[in-house]
Image (cartoon, rainbow, N blue to C red; front, side):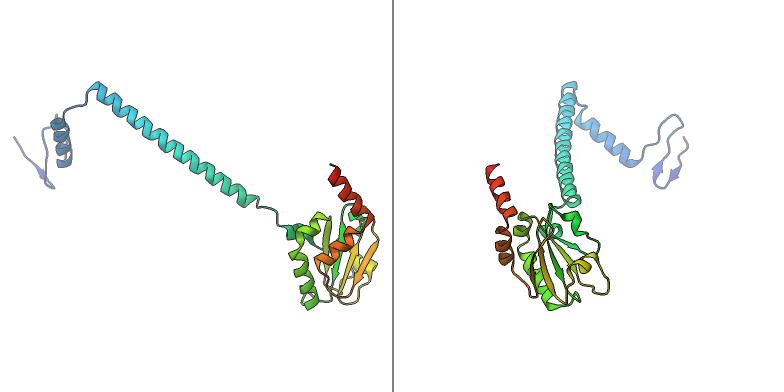
Length: 201
């Protein structure tokens, strides 16, 4: 019988399969343990199915959590300040009539300290203003003659409160608090009707 040694492995005759040392040892271990019975095979299959079900359930739960997280990222909760403040350069007041009470904040520069102070005050009370159907329009570029500037003719910093009917209700050359603005709005007949209607509904 002819023996060939190739990298430490023995080549058997052509009718015999090639087995490495690891394959031979694995086969010997299986034979030593004995082949599983049919019942044992069924138990092993059932246990594997249970494990697969648990893994699938955990995976499904994780996928559901991931989907919820992605939904929150795609549709974050609405920020009151984002709903409240809009640039006023392209806004027509007539489009807001009977829908909103515009507060227009003018300044000759976005760096004006009064403009900053006013916007901070409005941001702090954004929810109270939204409850009163207020929308804040800003215009800090006197070089662009917007429709708001043409109609309201501000000089430097100016706060203008406009009613739902489109009429100017208040002009102030200094920043105002949300509390002061809310008190003023709450005296409007239209606001009093709104409060009564909401209480009745």
